[in-house]
Image (cartoon, rainbow, N blue to C red; front, side, top):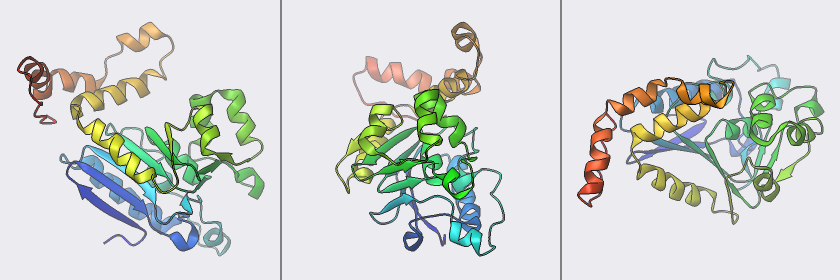
Amino acid sequence: MPEFCTVERDGHLTIVTLNRPERMNALHYPAHLELEKVWNDFASDPEQWVAIVTGAGDRAFSAGNDLRYQAEGGFRGFVTTGFAGLTNRFDLEKPIIAAVNGVAMGGGFETALACDIIIAAENARFALPEPRVGLAALAGGLHRLPRTIGTKRAMGMMLTGRHVPAREGYELGFVTAVVPEGQALAEARKWAAQVLECSPMSIRATKQAAMQGLDVPGLEAAIRLEYAAVSRLRASQDWIEGPKAFAEKRKPNWKAE
């Protein structure tokens, strides 16, 4: 059983809860190792199509790197797949939703940025405060944030380490939706349910093409590029089932194959 997180499976949905509330869900090396396995299991499980990641308690999604653990000499770097076993996981085609309750600081914010959708409670606060403690947001934050909200607005956050509330995060463009305090996970479940209404093969093709296409110079080149998940979609049963179900005016029976 995991020690630093909990894992719930509800049909095709996996919910991962960072579970170190006594440290505001800050993560240390043993937690990274544990989460790497959790996400490996999610990625390889054909029955799990969508995931939500959230934090235990109402104070924090994750305060980021456990600086107390690091100061005590426990720091041993990160795992290959990055902070929370997620931030360096560039080949994961299945969508992940972050349900942010409370603070998402440093690596916690970087974990949320590595997700595809961010649902934030009104008490959520986001920051990359690493420069204030002599560090840097090297788990993807320095690169994902400018790509998400633009260079100048991102630099305004990164060079000051300032805290950004949920509403401002929505206005800046890195938060997908803002909900009342205590409702982030419930709202994330609603979004996940909408994703699960779609073909999982289509969802994976959409995510892969959108994310990989961002790194291709020029719109035409991005459109013409061959994406592996798109090829798998075209060869799948879902490619046949979707139009057939539409024509027969019934709910599709997705196979994810």
